[in-house]
Image 1 (cartoon, each protein chain N blue to C red):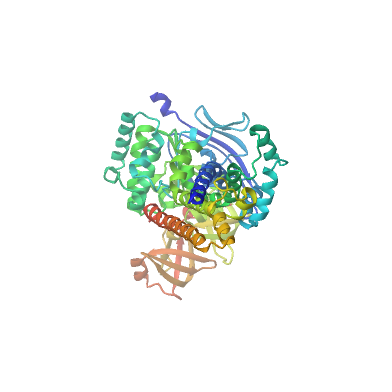
Image 2 (spheres, rainbow over the protein chains, first blue to last red):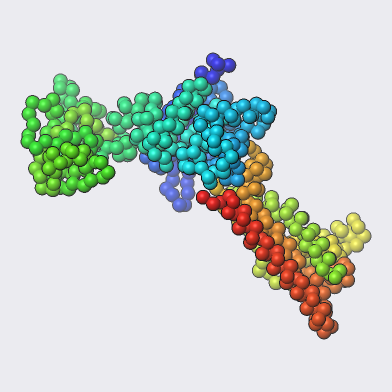
Length: 371
Length: 222
């Protein structure tokens, strides 16, 4: 039994074509498998993440494909097999907690295990309520719960059924960071004991960093990349993903030179004569490329710096300075327009104001080539 | 007032029968994705716009000795359905159908579809989801359907007259009786019945709105 549990693998191959008068045609086409533990499904909205979860849960049947958890087949178009949602034994959390408003928190948690014997059911419920620290809320109706409490009840309601896989569709998007982290910690504690595949959809970069063991990135119905979050999201190959994962600067340029000897490509940015160095990629001299740079990865200097390892130094003029919570967003014209994020203190020290002349410093490895 | 008793008997039977048949129909209308669904919706709504005499006329034909239902009934029981209490029940069920179906459809459609998805994911089949989630959350709609059906059947006139005629103790409902008394210039007796019907209708409607408010407040406050 224990051995079986540790080898649960969710494998999904699904193709779904959707045509609608209201929205442009959408096509989902994925093929992947995930081991036990948390796998992030990341991508811009409209990428098909929720549709994919609906397919796995059986709420939306794919046109073609096969969905299985280890050797338990949930859907197989070739064998004309489509286990109905209620028999799939999955846990699925939506963006909204979707608690039944006429039932108390406890009745909500019990909903999925009504088939158990009384004693067994009480035991399971009290265990999960304890784990999620909900004992004091059992008799409350959903309308009397806070957002975090409601989502905790929804999570307990899903997990008490002992699902064979767990699908989470941005379940924490409305909560503050502290609440998020505590719920994530509870989820991790639960999964340490149960070891099921968990597919966690988000478009929030911070959540990826907090959760990430593995990440699958999706774009326009297809899987763009998979791997560990740092590798995948810090070097995005797709432009839309680059934007979603926090690359504020996407600059058009042309490859001038590929230097295997230096391990770099030299690129001129459109609108500038300056040449910058970027890591080697799949491009040839003359190719048009897009360079993605995080606004927080750019250094500002009042004088031209020397003796740095950073190879890319551009001169520019401050266009605008704007404060957003604790970050200063500075737009600098240096050929192309760069967005640079600095702290309040740094902005004060540098005396940033429109018209100020300064130097931008870019590390080669902070410049990423995207498709 | 035997007419009042007859009307109540009719309204009660029609409400019970309609709840049994209209609920699955409303469920289907609310959740089916069939493209030609609108045709059924239009048919269900027909009694709202048709003059009662039109509906009554066709029902009379259908229930009479040459109509399909009347023929069948004649073969089975030895008499036709026209001018009988059973015929009146059948006619009233059809005439009051939209008053039962539409509040149910409206309240089913108002439910958050995510709740129904959540129920299915948690292992509940359609029947359990209906009993445990859809029905309790649609209680205001169910109450509205019950009262509207009851009150509407209680007060109908044209269809009853066409199909049932005016047979004391069999088809003479309270609205027919009022008409009858006015015809024979018994205004005091007519007024007595009319006032009773008015009061009952008002109390029933006040009950619906009062109940719906309480139920609504309990669940939907946020």
